[in-house]
Length: 254
Image (cartoon, rainbow, N blue to C red; front, side, top):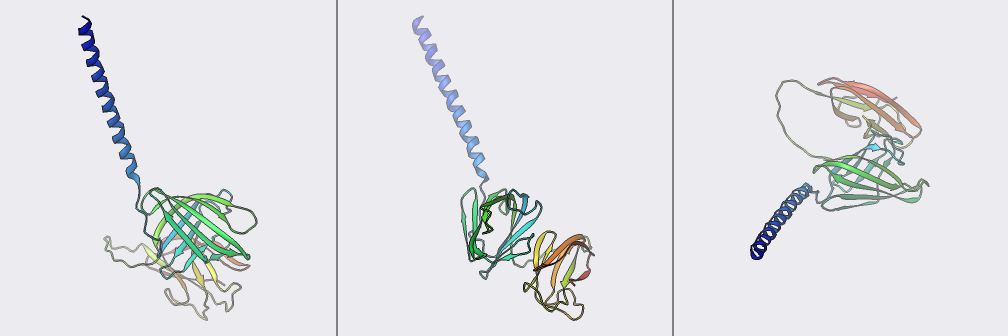
């Protein structure tokens, strides 16, 4: 009887060990599956445009919904635009680093004669978009500012082809222009739909056409859009305009 009980105990011990090993194997398998969410970061960000949309302003001072675009031109030019002040920042240098789970972009420049920096930490939800956290000291005397939001990475320039069906045009153009012969800051900066669109540095004596050199011409989806513009202490908008499918709207900043 003793030996029979001992045999049963050994059998139960073996069965228990097998069950534990099976459980460990199952857990390990599910852990491997959870780690397959890593995304491939670009080797560099030259030629990229990254648009940051603020969702949590925190202490940075830029309202929720505003978009800040940094262009990392293929020619080495880097520009960032503040949609609140209208200022365009051209950093002295920037650094880009990446790991399996995040990327960090830091820009350095001088403002008010003092060193300033901005740091964006990107957490991906896809290979070209995700969430970001923001830290910066913009030499304003207010210490380090923070914010959160979403980002999208796109090429700042490029070409492409495509075909479609339906026979209808869903986009039109707007051309911003001015007759002003002088500006306070050297350029009239224009925002479209809360994002930096470009600047005007030339003037006209008569109404130009969409696409003419010296205009700020943009192709937009048909419907209502908003704009604002700034030149030193002068400002236009915010106001709205309507794009007609296949049309050209010339908009003078007076």
